[in-house]
Image (cartoon, rainbow, N blue to C red; front, side, top):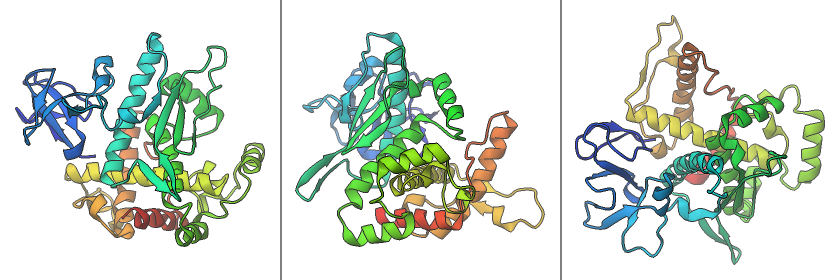
Length: 346
């Protein structure tokens, strides 16, 4: 992600900030220009183009800091407009979980915008639209709502915003990584399989050469996976054990890692990060993140810079007593899958 600063006093600020700690101006994010706007009033601002702006309607719920034109018929921003259903906000826990979910979703939309990916398509005369249901399960069955994708609609169990619940599920499924942003990136991968691959015979053929047979019965594959688990050598071909379950899941898992990779590299680029480790005879770790990954055509160059970066962030996390930020091995077959995705979206 880009890094931001207050346009009034140049104080560094975060993507999620609604006010500047230094000058106390209000802050809002303008999606169209990928910029933070600083202004005196919490009610409206004036953009550089002279357009009067106000906060998204969800600002009143402390759930969004994006800006929309004052005269727009839609009072919700580009990200919040995709909500189909949200939980009962009269329940304080639901509101807290929902705010965390919306924060993660806005980071997803930032990346989609960088990749020039649409949220509405017409496929063979049928409309495909990205929408979200954020559902609260019954108290006696916190796993009753299944996170997943169906024809453009992504459903998310809002309990995933609860760190204790998420960690419990992570342990139960023997996962090494589970985050809200990871969920969004995985599930939106299913949406873009429908939008970009499903109806194009040429692209579908190439997809199958990398990811396998998408016509395999999904229900049977799911049952087999949870019964017998992943093959012992899965790391040689797949980014995660779950990716072994079905071609669709291999695609969605790899897609999510592609988004992880691009976001981390763009952040490194904007910080001017250079890696020059105090190690002898390891030249492949010595890199300078001096390019915008969203403008780079070479997956080889992207990978060459990304792998040392994962070593750095994992080492930093271990210095703080945390688990690895990126606990994955990227094999050559996975690199080819990532290259397929990169070519598809560029």
